[in-house]
Length: 437
Ligand code: XUL
Ligand code: CO
Image (cartoon, rainbow, N blue to C red; front, side, top):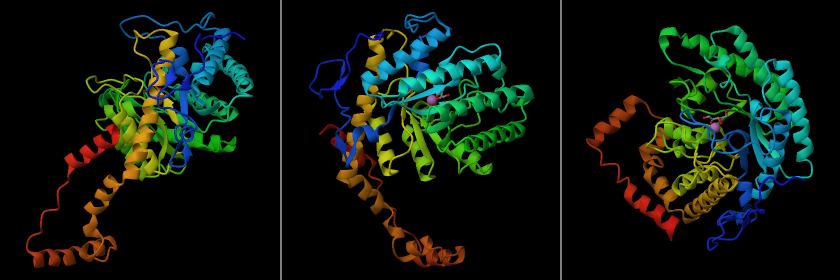
């Protein structure tokens, strides 16, 4: 059996370890709030970044070698990618993967041939999965890369393109079911517009919803029991994308009656591009019962695009895991939709990126559990809304009041007291103390 990476299995050695190829905080079997870390943190490898992306950007060529010893754009290459990916997942104790159809095989000119190749590679993947703990987290169809999708897929102005999008979704659903995937993602990369001067927005939104409805119908017909996800993102590649943020995507799903089958896949870097914190979009999804899965990465607030960095910001991972714990967990996973920086081009860097991300999330989980166990932040929030627990506040909550009765109450009072300090600085200080004590 060929070994693709000259790196030993990465083990937990604790924070004192100076071994770059060891986890300092991710200890898969350690119990946190009664559950194993690995169950709180179902990490996934993103096929596209890890096995396909070789560092090409608009200014320069590839810096990394992702040929894994085979000739690129061949089925041999597709297979060695599977072998290398599984070796890496096993060495990193990652139990899930996510994929786009086109990440798995080279696309042929004719869709019938591409589909044949997808059948072949998914047989190979299934075989490979046997005897391992590795499972599929979610699948998706790439409906943004090929030139035909220049105006979108569901939102295309051209009906033939819409049909090819439907065909790709059908096949990607087949593959997701075949590989036992927990979810199916729609990231509408080009489902948006550059200018309203050439765009019928209502028509495009109706068509996207129609495509999603057909996906649900077909998926359920072939036995897909998982969740469909929308992955919101405000812009890039399009100037304006319809799935702008969590709130927008939820409104869309409810408007078209898709909210029973769909949840959201929240990506950190997409939330920040929308002008929100990661925590904000997670909270919006969670309070609507739609926290489906997470694309675990981070952006750079000084840059206006999706840098897809491996997460290192422990404040962000802490507040993310705080949202996940408060939501009672989730059925999805933490997919590292993340890539090394272009100058970090070696095989070692592929592992180091994951070690960074997994440790950052382990720290986030440990910290979030501390915040919950400490209880001061939760207690503060409860206290802050206390005026709604009795008297006129309780009447408001029980909806026994009218504008007239509230107006009479206000007039009797003359003027209210101020609502009490928000104590943001005190709370931030508690957070720091919990993180760094
Ligand atoms: C792009 C992005 C995608 C989706 C899957 O910004 O996040 O990789 O996660 O299509
Ligand atoms: Co993503």
